[in-house]
Length: 290
Ligand code: MF3
Ligand code: CO
Image (tube, rainbow, N blue to C red):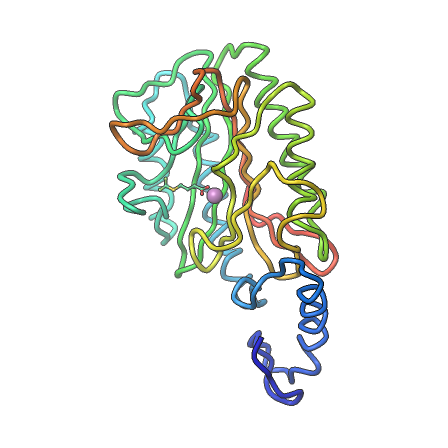
């Protein structure tokens, strides 16, 4: 950590003197760092001005998912969902973040049944009665990023798939309740993991959440197989996603060899995921996108 004078302007851009702004905060971080704990760098702490811009981006992301929720129907193709996402996003002056991201060819990820994540919308993939689908939307507005996903149950979904979708939603809620300053990402992770495994499910290990806001994917990487009291400390101004992928059978996954994107369960059993974007605040958390 480089030295800032007590009377210099704070690094956070508040225009306040350092001693009246983040100095005590930095000393606290340094204290924990000296104890060997993992603490975020300044670049991962969002300023109030940045948070406001990210909230605006998230308003679009939420509106896009609301529009999908309104329109999604059996008989539609996942390409139709892609069109809704592209049109709703661009009409609001924003850009779908997945489009051309590392070569991803569409504006949204649509992952059905045994697909874990990163499903590519296609005119050939038609939504059918009994499907469960994750629609994962991410938005760039004025250079600021938002990211969240929801599950939809289409028609007569089996009781066991419905339960999977419901339990993963509960996992995210229980994880969220652990998000507070000076706790650990592992506290959130264990809450997610315990609820999933208590219901007989497995948690995907090597794909997870991420810091988000100034970029699509920032540090830290956020997994859901870690124990309480481990991983990075959560501090006010940090922003990340809670997006566990939970499988009905084994945690093992396979990436589609043809398209290089679509991730499926190895045993072809169903998988579900919900994603929210969360800000750590002075006294807890704020859900930025859902
Ligand atoms: N939205 C996904 C996430 O939650 C990322 C998708 S990357 C893409 O991190 F290229 F597939 F869109
Ligand atoms: Co994400």
